[in-house]
Length: 55
Image (cartoon, rainbow, N blue to C red; front, side):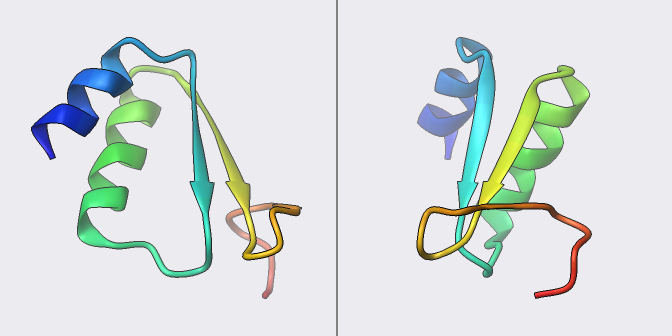
């Protein structure tokens, strides 16, 4: 988890894949949002999706 957060500090954006969000992924999404990084969501087929859209 610490390595992921360190990499996030050096990133310009975060890409999230899949429907299931683990605790670690949620922490990274929250950290990215707090740092004003753009967060992109993708489904299992690597197609862009939107976090508040219906599945």
